[in-house]
Amino acid sequence: MKPSQLRADAKAQAFMPKPKQVTAGDMLAGDQYARAEWQERIAQGDAVLSRLAQVHKQYRDGHFSLSEAASKRDPEMTPDAHFMAIRKLGQQSLERAAKASDDARERAEAEISALRSAMQTQLGLVENHRASEVRSHLRSLSDVERSKVLQAAVADADAQTIAAVVEAPAYLSGLTNEQAKAIRGQYEGKHASDKLGRIAVLEKAVAINRETAMQALKFNSELLPSERAAEIEAKQKAARAMRDRLNGAE
Image (cartoon, rainbow, N blue to C red; front, side):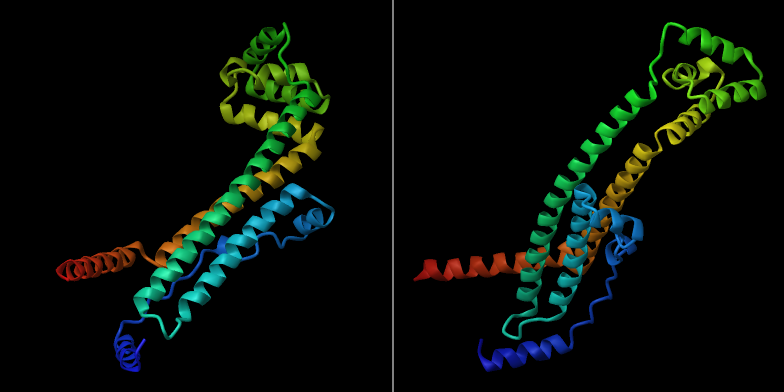
């Protein structure tokens, strides 16, 4: 680029409006895996949680790098050229992170599914031939009496009674959906707390990464808006058309 062009570009840049400050959401900006319990699990060789943490770091590092790169233009590039180059790099970074995120999420969801299946087997929550009788009896009781029976069933690991309630529509036992869900949660928490805790950790991590990905997309689109890219592409197209006409006139 000629010195005169550089000076003209610098002068034009000086009068350009300052870009608005773009900030990242909390999930993207902060280290969500810094909590001691998760770090301990990762240190002990938790491969699934470790991969989810790596994906989160990939999104987080990518957003910091993109922000820094966008603020440091090569003086030999025009503002538009710099914008388009950084936007392309940002899109590539997001695509890599999204692929890694999909792989990590699928591994986590596969483990969650396996844990739920193992927990179902361990707890024995399968209806037997007396399930209908149990529901009918519970439906005939007062709210207080029904609650006492169910709490005793939870405490005594009475899988047949609990299964009759939670493996069928709640109203058949005289319960609301929320009450039946609470009973299942109590039973699982008391008799399969290890698996339930593991599921909770993985579901939380998956949710964090999902929100982080959404915030990364939002950050990129605000930092490098598609509207400006469309304007630049239109100018590029017009310039190419002009060059083609000139070439055709030769």
